[in-house]
Image (cartoon, helix red, strand yellow):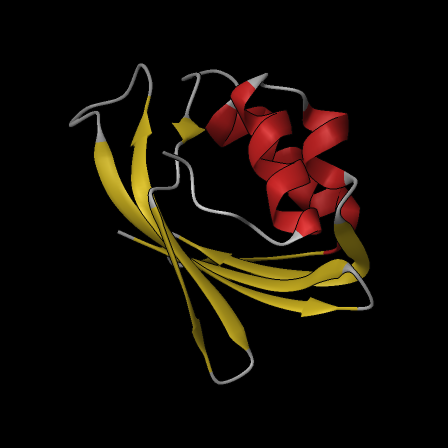
Amino acid sequence: MTPALPKPIAAYVEANAQLNVDGMLKPFADGTVVLDNGGRHEGHAELRTLFEEAVIPVKAIFTPDSIRYEDDQVVVEGPAHGDFKGSPIRFTYRFTLENDTIKALEITA
């Protein structure tokens, strides 16, 4: 059973399941910051590059199975599977939401 996710997170997860880059970008705020695998990606252009180079080629799809709220963050956990070494790998996504958009995201394994 998929947990009930806030609207922008649910939109991102749904677009990721379809490997739809434009859909994945849509819920992110213009100046969003994403920390992933030691890298920092800021704004839609850098996020598009991240998704096109690190997500789409290996068909990495995140499937959340838990959600909790910590301070001002929505913490979502679950496996990501795809055509990459070690698949599936369990990830923690820490979302910061603002005005019904994703303002920041930190992804850790």
